[in-house]
Length: 114
Image (cartoon, rainbow, N blue to C red; front, side, top):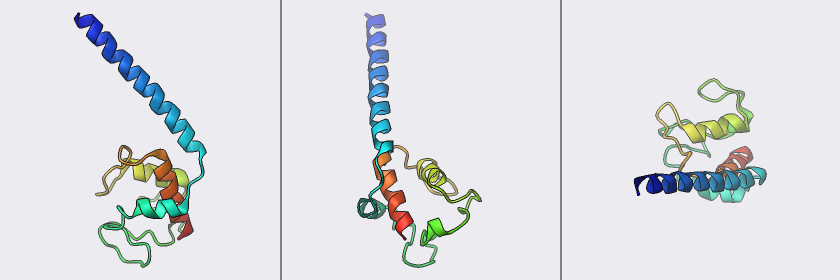
């Protein structure tokens, strides 16, 4: 009986992983929507300003994609901004599990519009 339960649990994890991989592959192919990204960004606005250079808790993101580097010294590009959203750092919590890939693409599109 125990082997059956372990087998079922492993199978469920495998299927869930395959489903997640499929969803992520679909989401990564869609371009971001700045209007939707603005709505998603509302949860970020408690820490990040976008209409001034003010540091609230985290740095201002006004004109982010016009800067050469992020605060961590890495170049400003979609991959590094997505990595920062996913992994957090320097006091920012990770959002890898809180936001879908599409949400992240939408936020990046919004940040590019600033």
